[in-house]
Image (cartoon, rainbow, N blue to C red; front, side, top):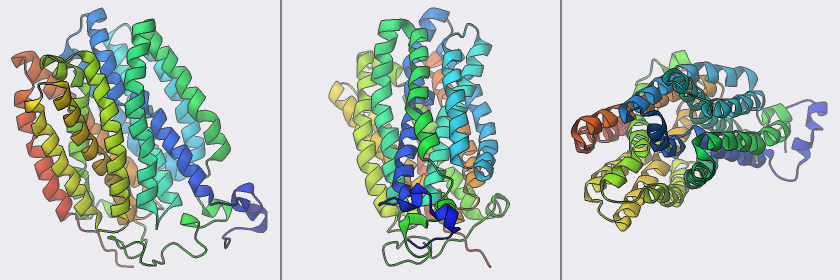
Length: 427
């Protein structure tokens, strides 16, 4: 491979590897996204009912604390994004992993609403926010021509995490109580990710004498394999990107998965038990969502390298609408699994395309800052989601009103995605 660095740097084992080191980085990024599980809503939702039983707090109380913690996490994401641009992923992920494990230990010892708020803020910042944003930003740095497919592969970590953690947590709570479950999760977080990150993650391909995608020439030369929205990579600062219509439309287009997806997952146990299904079914549905999300993510990643990304993003929003409508017809386990499949498809398409479209539109150099801003929006929407659903349930005993009201959001997101044309920068 043609080098971009000095002879001493080229001598590193990463540049002498028989295969492109970006694939190793991709594997660690996928592992990081898997490890984000304890901070994701699909894991937190399993703790909600045990918390209510022990503390006597209402569902609205917990949803409000979760919203406040998530909003705090949202504010932190711009800062985390800037640290990614400054420090690189290796240092940042290592610090995040250590703190994430400590946050899980904190969750095992909470005894007041304020302590729960602090715990939610920590696990949402470190898990759901940082260990989603940093890995996808790292992939964007290492891949250009194959960015869509590489990002899709990385989301295998998210999907497998969604299938793995809920039943594992359900088991841990049954065996050790919800406090013991959090202690076990702290050990899992530290064991999975810290050493691989230090050993294998590198800042960029150029930092070890390589080119993105493992190409021998610069990745802005297309060979027909990437027929998407971009013609060549142009870097935008966050300030410049904020002046484009595309950035604001993409923020709106990515909001439905964050807000509605989080709300439905957070209340999934309550929704299904309200329809006469056992709580274990709610956890089992996550195992249906996961393979469907994997399949959809792979398809979306392939399409993102071939067709305008905004069309793929709009298709994911249509799937979200279909999934929400299916909730009204759930009356059996089979219906619940069908709902899980459709929502898994929607999740895979939206999350993969949303991750790919930012570097495709705005380049690699400032991707941490731009993704940090996007993640602030995403986590902010996710923070809002569970609260109106919980309030509606506490008042009416049903989620129907909230679901009907929020159907308007993914419909609006379809329009926003289609209008989000790639920005053009005059150089």
